[in-house]
Structures are given as structure tokens and as C-alpha cells.
Amino acid sequence: LNDAVTYYERHLPKKISKKFNIRPDVLCECAKILAPIKITSSKRDIIQTFYMKFAKDLYRWDLAQYFTPPTVTDFIIDMLNPQFGEHLKDPACGSADFLVAAFHKGRSIDKNYADCLWGSDNSMNAVQAAVLNMLLNGDGKTNIKKEDSLENVNNSLDSYKIMVCNPPFGVKIVEKRAEILNRFDLGKLWEKDSKGDIVKTDKIVKSQETGLLFAELCVKQTSPKGRIAIIVPNGYLGNRSENYVFFREWLLRHCKIASICSFPRFTFKTSGADVSASVLFLEKRTELLKRSTDSEEYFFHVGMIERVGWDLGNKVAAPVFKRNEDDGSYLISPDTGEQLIDSDFSSILTDFRNSLSADEMDWITEGITSKVCSAEGWSVSIKNVLDDDLKTLDPKRYCEKYVSLVDAIKQESHFYLTDALEIISQGINSLGERIKKEDSKVYKYIEIQDIGYGDYKYTEMKGWELPSRAKHHVEPGDIYLGSVWGSVTKWFMADSRLEDAIVTNGCYRLRPLSGESDKLIDIVAFLCTEAYAVQMRALARGSDGLAEVHETDLSKIVVPIVTDKKLRIEIKEYLNSLLDGRQTLSSAVQLWQSNNAISLPKVSKRHHHAVLV
Image 1: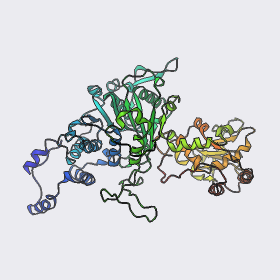
Image 2: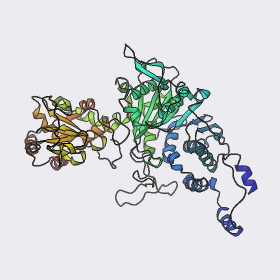
Image 3: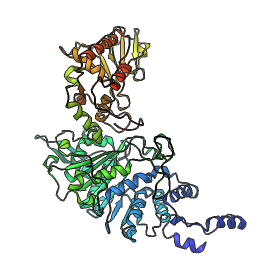
């Protein structure tokens, strides 16, 4: 016991007792069980299970708040493709999950790769958890220390070939210390000058999200041409707020985008993060751009991860294995003899290495002897981002599923949604007149959960009972579309029965433009399809289930025209029924699609409600 304590106490931050409060005979029995097992030589999943249990019972730590699932960390490290002698750092290392993944990969090319791994965290509990994790996985070096990485941002400028980070993020997790904020570009106030260029001022902001500061830290501490992987909420990549627009502008000036890979919602639910997030893979520029639009054209990869290898609805993160589609039997790996994890990580990695992005950046395929497949991976031009005033980087907008769908619809007769419909603001009628609710009047109130595929129900409430979100005053002929990511399939058309009705502000209210009523035939049929839902989900901006389609993005919705004259007559009958309040289109459209009467690209439905597009 003394020998073991002497060896391990050099690494573990917390002092180890040299006494066991246990009877000798019980200790002997425990030793008989444990002695034949060399934990550090076990498989990683066994080490992980032992580590989570051991740390929780020994130190009373709740490791979930620091934990990043191994399938995620392995994927990100594989994408970064560390090479011999390349130093890698995680400045918010938590329980060192990224470092463990890098250690196992790096050890295959350099037995001393532990010397190249560095980690820091400002939580002593996290550091203790990280050191223990690295020790159990066979690292006797543990270059991990307790450190305020943000405070020491300037101590290691341009020092590491690879930076990887899953920082604490959220609008409530902020840095307020002026002396720290002063060390960051994103700790200063940014604004647009008279020419419309985004410029940094000398003014220090009152607070800044730590997630944004960690992104800047990773860029600053990476050496030129080095690479970065950082997990960020999708709000950072798509929100219209100036703070995020300025962040994206700053990022594009300092880095080239190699890949953006999205995760479905609840991927990080074990750590309490109920947001949709993506991982940015970046290459640091050798020269800073004056403005992002000065960039050369290049292509970046986009991957949409749908299956992560565990049950997204389960906080325990129970694994999900691949099964035979015919009989449901589990598939077994011919190499290991074990069940295959059902995840998209391997295919996304292959796609990345076969994309045009790999032609731009040598490190993506360095050391990879041959391409795994001949198919070209999905990538898009950076011009799509640079031509957007908001510099949107949300991967949903650039993913193959969405882009290919829109391109296919555009190959046939089509129009844009707002070419036929106008958006009516809240609290006014179709003539633009302001309407005031009457406290004693009985209204038919329609909440978002009351809306289906072209149908609705309502609750009668007096004006004073209506919630504050009751905003839209209904007129017959209105079309209401769910505006939030989780409700984009919801829509209905107001009929003559809805006198004195009010609809929640979780919808957009639209009405046909003058002379465009014939296009309602195409619109109401289209609203019943997955092709519509995919476009709406892809255009939603935000980090969680409340991500919303902005009204300016409704103009990007492409509607296919129904060209079959007989079918148009049939749909017209359903449209008239809708206006009379008699029936819905959903079942009929599904039948028409299955019979190929409506010509639309085949779009696969989401296998889980957490999938983003």
C-alpha cells in the first residue's frame, strides 16, 4: 500500500490515505478479485465505467458535468488527425476526455505522445478527475494543471499545433472581470463604421459569454496553420444578434473553416446541456484578414450527425447498436467480435477526408494511406457565407439534405413562398389597423399545441384570461405557420368559423397577395410534406428546441408548382373544404405522393425528433 501511494500521489491532486478502514479478511477478498485485473490494460469502455464509478464513490464527484462522450471525443480527434510530435491542448479539459482520446490515437504513432498533451481547468475537482482519468488510461505524465485559462490567455500565444475544447457555454455563463475582458478582442465593443465595416473599439464590454472567449483563446494559442476543434451552440453560428455576427466576422478573419459538423439535440444531455451544438474545425490563417470578404474562395465540409451511438432521450446515455433491418438481429464486427455501435461518426469522417476541403488543407489526410471510398464528400463554397450579411455558419443551411432538396425543387416549376403570401404583423388586421383585445369578450384561443397538419382546435377564453403570447387576430383566409424549430410541421388555414379568434405568437400569420390566390393550391399541398418541414428546420436560427425561423428567412422557402391539371382541381376541392372548415389535406397529400401524382424529391423522414433537419 505504501508503494502504491508513493507512486500515485505524485499525480493525484488530492492526498491519498495510507490506511484502510476495512477488516483484513475483507481486504484479502477484495485483493483476490482485483489483483488479476490490470485496469490500465483493459478496454476503454471498461476503464471508463470503472473511472466513473471509482471517482464518484472515492471523491464524491458528479462527473457528468465534465463528461464528453467517448464516441464524440474519438470522432473529433480523428478529424483533427494529430501527427508525430504535434502538441495538443484542451484549455477547459474537464475530465480530460479529449486528452484521453488523443492519447490513445497518438500512442499508435508515438509511444511517448503523452509528452505532447496539455490540459487545464479552473476547477480543482475537474483537474483531479482529469488526472485520474489519464492515469487509468496509462498516462504517467499528466501535463494537467489547475489554471484560469482565460486569465492566462497571453501566456501561450501561437504555442500549440492543435487546440480542442468543449467550453462552458450559455448566455448566463459569462466573464465580467474587466482585466480579463481587456485581453480579448471579443471582450471589446465592436460596431459598424460609416462604411459598414465591422471594427473593434477600445471600450470593454460589461460581460461576455465564456464560450466566445474560449473560442478566441483557442485561435490565439494555436500556431499559424495549426488547427482547432471547438464545440459551440448553434446559436453562435446562426443567431442574428450583433454579438454573434461580430464573433463570426472575427472568426472568419482569423481562420479558414475546414468543417462544421452538427450534433442532434440532447447529445450533451448527460452534462445538463439541452442545446443543439456543432463542432467547428478550423485552420488558423498565417495572416489576419482586414475583413472576412477579403478571403480567397475555398470549400468547407459540412456534416450532419444524426446517430451518435446512444439513446438521445436517455440521460444515462445507454448505447444503441446496429441491427439487421430484416430480422432485428444485432450486427457484429468481424474484427472485434463485438456489437457495432450505431453512429454516423465513421461515415462523416470518411466524407470529410474525401471532400474538397481535404484538397485545400493537407493535414486532413496526412498519414492516411488511401481514401476509403471514391465518392466525393459534401462541401460548399465559403462564398455562401461571405455573401451573407449575417455571416451565417449554421450547418443546417449548408447540409446536403437541405441544399440538394432546394436544388431539386428549383429544377422544376416553382415559386418562393413570400412571392404569393405576405406576412401580417401581430396585433393588426389585414388592413393594417391596430386591434385591441376586450377584457370581457369571449375569444377562441389557438395555442401552438392546438395546431396540426392543416387542422386546429381552440379554447374559449375571455380577453382578460388570454396569455400574453395571444397576439394574432384571425381573419378567414389567414394561413398560420409554426415558426419554432420544434413546431414547423404545424399549420392551418383560418376558416369562416373562426370569428373572434386569436392565435399564439409562436406562428407566422400570412395572407395571399393580390392576384396570387391560385398559388394557394400549391402552398397548402406543399405544407403537408416533409420537403416543407426540412426547409423550415434548416432555416431555423438558435441553439435549442426554441430555434426560430426569422420572417426574412421565409422568403427562402421554395414551393413546387403542381402541374397536373386534374390534380389541381382535386386539391382545389380540399382547399375549399379548408375554408369551409370541413377537412384537412394531410392524408390526401400523403396518398398523392405515394402515387407520384405530386412530383417532389424523395425526402427521408427524421428517425428521431432531435435530428436537426
